[in-house]
Length: 216
Length: 145
Image (tube, rainbow over all chains, first blue to last red; front, side, top):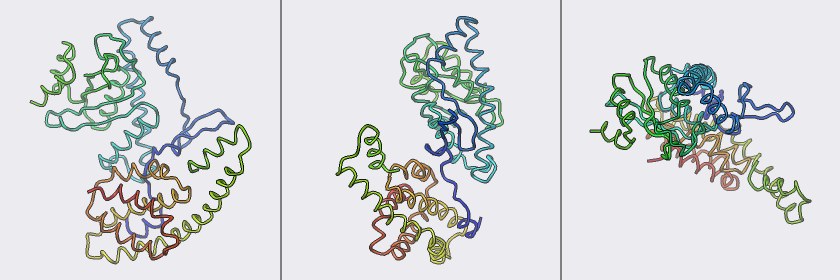
């Protein structure tokens, strides 16, 4: 880039800026993103209905099916993000700085109404990334199943980070709104690094204790 | 659309606007004309102002200067549009949050001061105050330390 290019071209800023990213056409009764791809606002009751229907029909296999669905969605989401961001910022996704990509990812979450996403790299020495999501639409507060239940987010985050890192990382949920916590929290890392966390979660250990153990 | 106009239009959905409210609307439209003039001046003078700034930091690393200037040009364009709309929230939503996420650079402060001096010269004492609040918003985003 030189000065002439800078002055004669649009300077891309916030791809997911609200008011630009989501646009509605009342005549057609449609919502779309800034590239014209159709968006659909799904009512919360439909999300609950799908999960309730699955539980009724397939019982214990529900988490597995939901995670598979979200992995499929995650692959498409990543492909779409890669294409859209590359087009907007004028460079391949791999050339965005990590800071830029993380910013876009958190804004993507916000603008679609999936809550507030925060990434915490404090556990990178342990090979893990801590992901926190506030105001998640995917789980009901205080339903008390005994185990974290944001299967949608587990699958989505897992596939996003697999695509991003090119490694077979896994995602484990350690805190859940359904268990009365104020947010959903996840740890992402390679399976061998995550195994102790999986065991701790299954034994009912709370997120604060898990994070404390990781830090020591 | 700024908050005042939006609120007035929402009010007008249910009833005619009262005289004082119509007056407010007139003031907004008259101010819009002045703000558009300032916007046009910034647009036509942008290249000259930025070139002048780069000449003043000629000894600095070119890549770093361009990267920081890119942030300032984005900030200036966003601030100019927010000024036309008279809407600080617009600036924050469209560019402010993005600017706050940019990697900090000591050049942001230097280039921001130089560009501000250029803007004050180009806009003069009458027009600079229209842009100033939005420029300050941009400064708060880019000069964080």
